[in-house]
Image 1 (cartoon, helix red, strand yellow):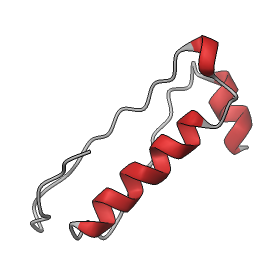
Image 2: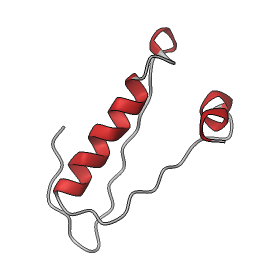
Image 3: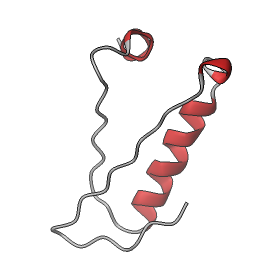
Image 4: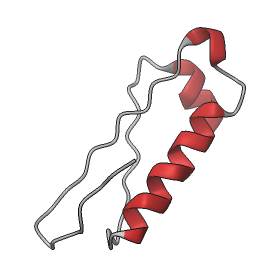
Length: 63
């Protein structure tokens, strides 16, 4: 994953989608951890997780 250095006015968007055949295997969690690590490494001070209301499986996971 390649992310350029953070500037105060920058925002980064990471879309994490896991194919249904691979859901509930931990791959999505690993992808989020990797994105978080990369964003922190280039100086992003804050990460905001957004979930679609229609994604009930993920909403139940974070509830």
